[in-house]
Length: 375
Image (cartoon, rainbow, N blue to C red; front, side):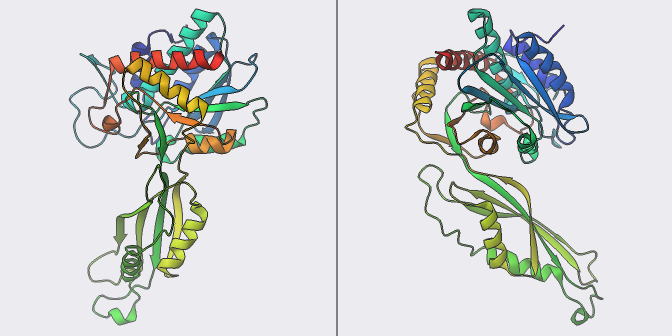
């Protein structure tokens, strides 16, 4: 019996109770259940393996014509953390208006809301709208699954817009900064700590590079939506013991970029700035997301959200990154809105929760968006 998509709360609970903590991910189990459910709606599906027990799921109406509305969400979640939970982290328990569990806000509730909206559309209209559902693995560790989509041959997938179900408390978000996470490694020569002149201290090379980074200039204009890019050194390691000259040291850099910045060029610029004693490598590379706020679909979705929630919308951005910019590289530079029922402040937190009322509200929003797209 396929998983029921009718009740978004029960569906969210099922998704939360399925462990997809990344690492290791294990999204494949959830993909198998969701594939059967989407097939029951009459959608064609494709499962793309990206590793043992890990896969992306795509679903679409093979008989639809015209451009498709692409909904995307990620199936993996972050680890539980060291702090104890007061609720079962994989229990999906509902207490009052709160549905608890890892992934409840980020972002299994958003996936459940959209799939329930699709089921409602099919029940009401007797057919499916032109949609493409993209459910990815490995978003939390740098959009791994989304980046693998470029390996697929997807003829006839004319995507007209992206709807990204990340947590926004049902508010329209039209942009986010990019993320470029770098690791810098410095090598030296070990020696006895009492004879440092015989060695080459790798930690000193690291410290010199970090000091230079404090004066790094992006030399880019302020983005009217996203503001200025930022740079932060997050970790530093090095040395074996106190009485040896360290021959290796490393540090990590978290750079958040705005639109128009080439990450490839930026990496080269940072490397030239800190000098050749440190070698840089990229760990996470996700572009920024921005939109033309005058785009008709952006305006239409904004008006839909306002009419359902009763709250006046404005041009909002979020601090986290999404699969959206990566999917634009696959499907084209289409308008993209981040919109989901999850609470952004609950993402990655102990005792993560999502409002039950927000999930139902989001189903209504997504349903209206689907009806408008079909018309």
